[in-house]
Image 1 (cartoon, rainbow, N blue to C red):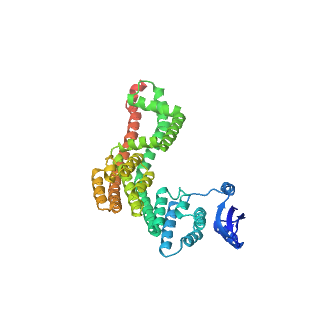
Image 2 (cartoon, rainbow, N blue to C red):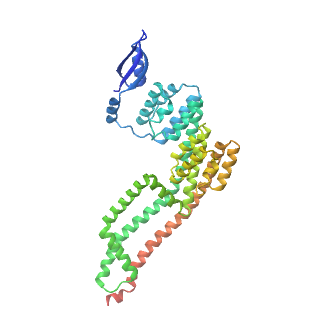
Image 3 (cartoon, rainbow, N blue to C red):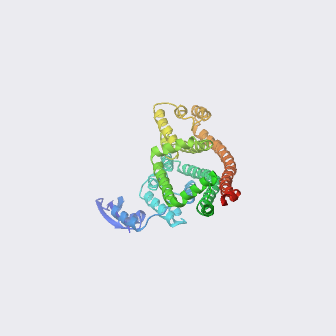
Length: 404
């Protein structure tokens, strides 16, 4: 059980200190008040907290539960319920142990006098910087329920967009996996049996058959080595992608791929416009909003452009001119609309409108790409299997010459 060190004022006005063992910060405050003391500060002992963290590891809370928590908190605050009371209700009604642990910790922090934004910042896996910045702006400006509602809507649209992307990629991924399995079966099982039959007859095999048999021998002989090499390559690429330079190289390569590059650029543009528009609508200053949105975009090249834009905006340059240096990510038409919105002081609304417009365009591009990818993958699979079958049947047509 956590131990809390406190400083308090007794009934005679003298300062005193001590410690109490309690389930949480709120219970510790009640225990101190029960002694006739007025608590000044309460701090949980780090060693006690560290010991507790060894005994249990908080599990990750699902995106759906986080979105529900934010939306329900916004509804309660809009109905006039005090923040501490709203957090207590949500903690009591949490549907999972992991969520209950996080909501309880946030509740205790808020009851102890910590701002909600600072408490949420302790859980970066559940509440990224973009949400913390919005909550901090809402607390400062006195419109926290509105900000929480905007965060919930933002999360909902983000999950919907990601869901459409994943759903569009399911069938091509299944076809690619099936093609790889068929190739592995043919090279390791089917072809070696034909090779044994051909070797008994002797004679010169057609060049296509020899090439297929050689490829099969390589896979059978060095299959394990090839598998280990593929795993090492995948892990190496994953590790490289974690660094800024690695992500920069990967993003640059993806943007150069026909069709896919435009799709990736539009996806990054939609995320950026929606994030920045939501932050500005929540009252976050432009420079701070750009810095927060930059960290959550998911595209290193776009992040570099935004980082340079932050410096330009601080020097008095307009946002449209600052972002126009990267036409691959920010088309001229978009920058024209952003420039007009800046002049009319409607930048937040225009960015949200642009995000919605390009989201519809992204959806159409996805459907078109998938409709082209499906027959292309089927044709590729049929071509590979057909080539192998033809290559293994060619010697049959010359079987009489081989027997001789």
